[in-house]
Length: 409
Image (cartoon, rainbow, N blue to C red; front, top):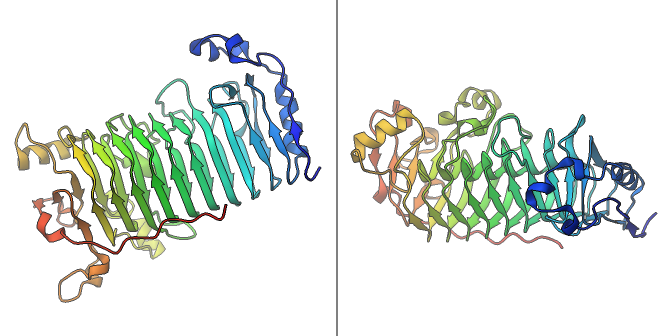
């Protein structure tokens, strides 16, 4: 079938005008259930150069979908027009799993209410995700699937103009990947809105992250094949990420305080600039090590570097936030340092650093945490948070700008 154009002729409710209003669109009784067989066969038969077009409509699935062929495009009529609904799913761990397939594009459709991850793409390169909506329509719930849009072990990834809502881990998650652009997306009511984990060379820009537990996260975790470094987070709107943490206990995101704007954990060479960061009730920006995230023992076993280094925060605008931190310990600390009506400064740092890398008691310039546009408090984590103190002037420094990420398509 190389080079063929595959047209999927849908049945049932082909135009959403005929499906009714938004609330009626969620009524699975109106969905086309026969279409599942058509799409399963199209994915099984697909080959390089094929375009699978899914017409407008509401389609019900009781099993996950899989694609393993490279060079395939899946295209709907729009994220609010072509809706793949998995609320009756009884088989499969994902809505759509794309495994070992490169040169893959998916665009202009929605994947709703999957039992696990909505869209997982693994072990491929040259991946384009455009105009895709993933959503759990019941709102924030621990029983929702972990990830909405989830490329992992991939190279050359573009995620743009998409929406992710309701994931119990991350709405948009890019893991163990390299050369990544995440732009012009909207993420809401996830535990983590956007998360870049153990990945290299990522640009995250022009996104809107609101109503998540944490807006944008840049993480490194131990016990994975490789660490990551080199992320630019810029030009984003990151505001009012105050939703309670509904992640599964024991997962890394379960420790993220509700009210976190941007969180950098154990990652290096991260530049945060030209964002609007506002009204995140714990802190607009948090910089932390794995020690304060509760995974220090894992790091020691894995010979993992838990310290955030080479961080540069500059040219952002801040509003509000820090006035009602999540958890009694942080609340007590806020009152102790800033009074009953006071607020945390815009940048919180847990205070952990690598003592072995100090030169004459000073952190080398390339490893410094630099904050040019906000006040920063050192929470003194290494000493049990006994002496938190403002360290703003100690961190007035800068790093050389990173080059923009360049994708080969």
